[in-house]
Image 1: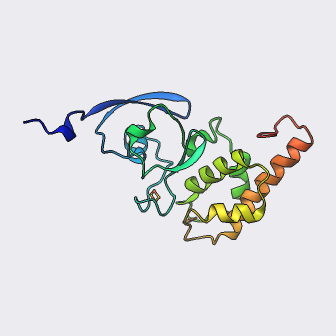
Image 2: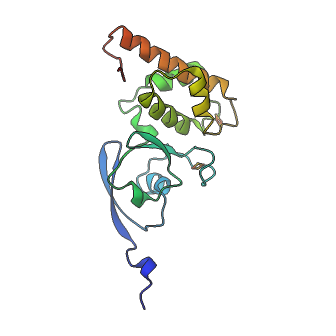
Length: 177
Ligand code: FES
Ligand code: FES
């Protein structure tokens, strides 16, 4: 007799990750973070708690931060996924990454990809964010090294620099209203 829960495994998934379409044959029970790391070799996305608490696995799904350990890879079909590898595609650091470096927003760095993607999604949606709003948002992810002050300073510095660039109409300005 056929087990109805297994009739579709393994299945072919088409995933749009960092602007590239990937086809993966995998079981429907596998999480997005496992497929990103083990099948697509995008190991910048980290795995901590595996149950939605730490945020180390944060990626962008259609522009919004999401816990990749809480999603099945199959749920990501048809969505645009961005991982931390998308930030510096040309090999240099983005303004957000530079701000983390300048403000010492990391020590061991394990949590950093998750914080970067959390901040990237948040600032894209809310470029006018205040420091208090930034503080609230970064509290969603866990860092055991830095304390949060330097992370807040980094995200705030990036947001401020972007707003200044927009106000001055500079060509590198991003996310201007
Ligand atoms: S590994 Fe996903 S939230 Fe911790
Ligand atoms: S820098 Fe080590 S956990 Fe955040």
